[in-house]
Length: 345
Image (tube, rainbow, N blue to C red; front, side, top):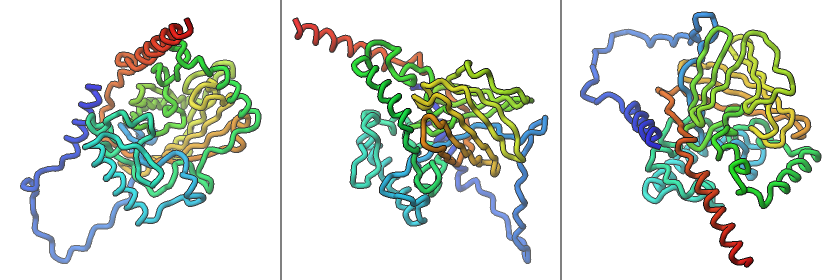
């Protein structure tokens, strides 16, 4: 947590512009027309790749799935977007004074119930205290539905059977807790690479034949091969899958298979993700993705996220070292077990 606070302080320092008294005034030139804006050319690495390197954020207030009441509306109007931004600023103001307010059904933005006990603003972890990749989309998932498609009948049975087998055993031991709670892997690392509640930052590094994406939360690094080798054998499964990439013009296309059936979408047995990473200008990447598994969903689904460059660096996310939550959760469960045993006797 100390490193997270330091990260927030660093962001605030970097956000402070030069003092007004430091500005230098020059006399305007007479009869000089505004210079035409030069077309932006993407920089390249020493081996000729489009240079994607740097520290980036996909931090956003846009939900993954579109609220049902918006139906097929993909974009907010400018007026609606301005109101959305104001609502978020109002929410942050309340957060500073009272802590994170809960979401309600009257349209007031807030947090899901599991987040309300955190005072995010105190530790610099509120969404709006970091860089935001604003956009007018009503959901990150594109298309008229704007939502993850329905599960297939077989997937519904499979997911229900797993839930039934786990019911009543959620707190038996560490192996029964979610992967994120155990600091093994977070669903947002994917792929697809999705924003989190905070620390929605990642670093891209390149070398001949490879691109590496390192997520700040929870310090996972995905290595993407560009050397033409095929995917690993199907029986080799990895938390973040097996990623191979190729360039299509200025776009890095990443094909990922060989996931486990536990992450990033529990129950998906043959997950296939295609990512398209395009550097649009000095400070912007367009990140697009398509997810498919015919045995899991009734059809593929796609999304896109604007990504902004930030000063960095990434900060250590010491998940295991500070993971007292897992220990306390299990300790609390053992206390409840003991109390239940006493009542039974």
